[in-house]
Image (cartoon, rainbow, N blue to C red; front, top):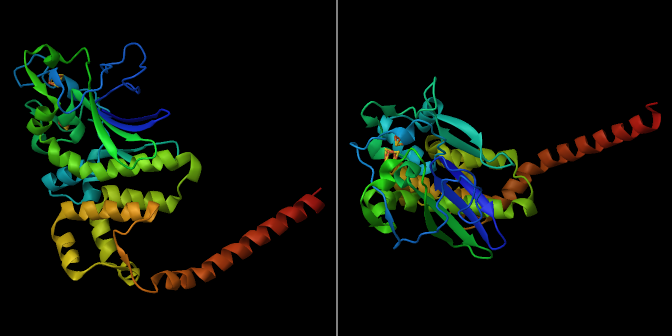
Length: 316
Ligand code: SF4
Ligand code: SF4
């Protein structure tokens, strides 16, 4: 499974699919498994997967499966683990773009490309399997028109030779398939994150590479809800930002709400917004606190510059 993105003049897209060649459904290279027709929610397609099919589990034997924040939340809850424990045991890191935006993929077994959760009986985490596993053999495309903040969904069929589900005499609409696969909640929870990635990508070349701190924040807000929970209760956070007592209680009680809040907070830090109220005078206090650090940095840079000049003048 791959999370793919491409740009056209008018569109930015994020694709969620399973082991797909990196190509859009329009203008694809020969041999791509993507059927070059974009589907809408009401489009019908022929496909059925079931345990008696001859290829059962074939699609889990060679995976490349990026995970979304909601995938990780569901799976860590299933195992009764902290996010850190789940990530350490069942995922591998990768970079989602040339700037090094942190991503996580599902781990494979140590001696093969098989998904770590694949068992003789099938998927060992079926009720909490990731969104891309639910979508397969559909791919889901997030499409954002230039100048718009709305991400629209489009779909396409992924037709790989090993998958016999396309031969089964069963037709359904995309909307029916999404319902049957339990994708409604997954898509709701992943929507905010997808938008954020698209926004970062479309801004990428104009704003340059995000700082290391931005990536650390992205990593925590996306994949480590337990650390984020500690973070919003820390004195540093509460000194500058204000969460009503009732809302805080809800966030500490309900991890789905916490995830939604963490992504709203991340969007506010990266792009501006009003997910969290900034306390009166907090900005001024922050500037005051940082003033000494900035001064030290400036002096350090000046000294470095002077040393470089001296080296140039007298070095030889
Ligand atoms: S999580 Fe389950 S469905 Fe998804 S690749 Fe692994 S075994 Fe297959
Ligand atoms: S029909 Fe396709 S999706 Fe279902 S088990 Fe076979 S390869 Fe996997």
